[in-house]
Image (cartoon, rainbow, N blue to C red):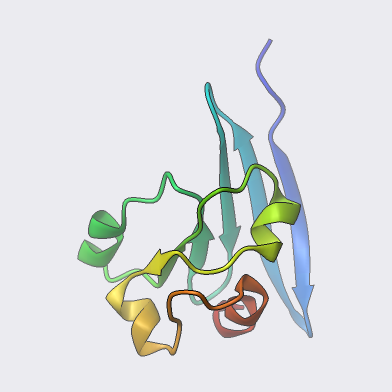
Length: 99
């Protein structure tokens, strides 16, 4: 049986972000996607994201969308830094920037 993918909408004011959880073999793949960028669990390869000039934020130690929303920035791409995103910043603040 294939594990079920979970998708939710997150509302930030009048804007909407997509939250996706995909169960993989050992851990869950979690992505929070806004218009201007995305937040991703430890599966994110920042070197590749930097190559594409993505506004990408990495979080670690999360297994659910709820945990992702309570996390802090572990690391981010140069494009994210240019938007004012920094290590240690609460994800709730980042959502407002990337929505």
